[in-house]
Image (spheres, rainbow, N blue to C red):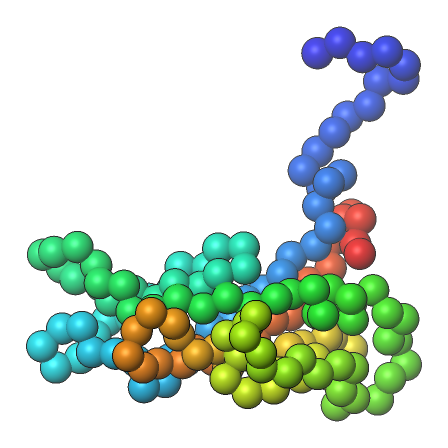
Length: 145
């Protein structure tokens, strides 16, 4: 490595802003892909969730997908929210054709943390919803937002 100027050590923490925890609470009315039930699991990609049914002896079956926008949540994170009473609704995201929300989603300040609860309607499948929750985690030494 060649540098011009003062030596500097770089680490992952130098570029890390924090962690976005996506907690999958439950699946509701999911499509059946096996004989009587399914063994669902979720793959989360930036902005998209895909639900699959785990199969032991064949390829896993796709059980739908959903997208959601994290921009309103990130914008709320950048606000100065310290001192707000717990339970304060910071913003609300309405269902639209651009998202897979089954109902309005509230971004709420709870016990000093910003939380967003989501109910996502699965697409490309006959039925199913996924309930999820977003929460930001500041890490010591990270840049933060």
